[in-house]
Amino acid sequence: MDFLAPQVELVRPWRIATIVAATVAGIELVLLLAAGSVLLGRSLWPHVHSAATRAAIEAKHHAAPAKPVVRAPAIAKLPRSKTGILILNGNGVEGAAAQAATLVDARGYPVVATQNAPRTGYPTWRMMAAPGFAGEALRFAKDMDLPRARVGPLDGMTVKQLHGAKVVLLLGISR
Image 1 (tube, helix red, strand yellow):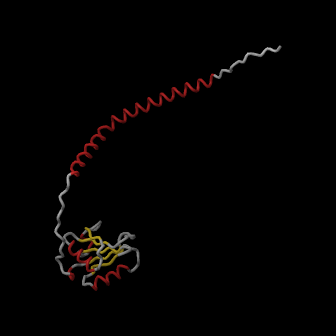
Image 2: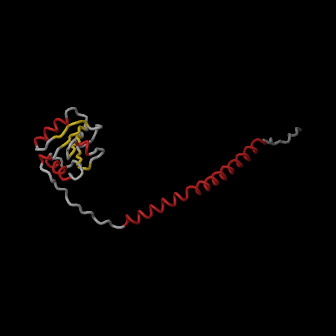
Image 3: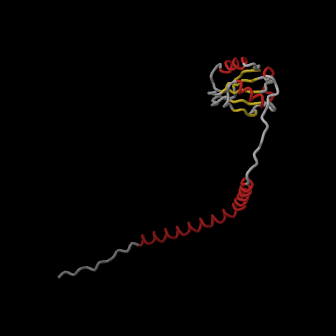
């Protein structure tokens, strides 16, 4: 009769050591994250608190219905013959400013100068008015049959750069 040899379970101590080491490392990681959150939170708290306070104050002020602003319509003061126009080619098409100058001149406006804009690629025609001449710009837009043209203040230009013009016509890709 053969005796069965007792089964000996092999002990693998490296597995237990690995599990213990991973558990300790996980606990240390959680403790480091908690400590970092507390320290970072203390340094950021004043900034977050002041930003939240400002946002609450702004929300309170903007929550009230605003009174409508009634502005008087801009009225042209100068006749067409005294309203100088500066034409800037902002669409990149060679000769576009000269063609536009012909149209502007035909409508009774003197063309002060034609030149290229600092950059090209403007999507639409725009008009900029010298300070106090928004009425002239609006009348010019109507005379040029540009009902959708945007009229705004001088954007990046000084009055000196206008060469005496009251309105700047910036040519874009489409009217």
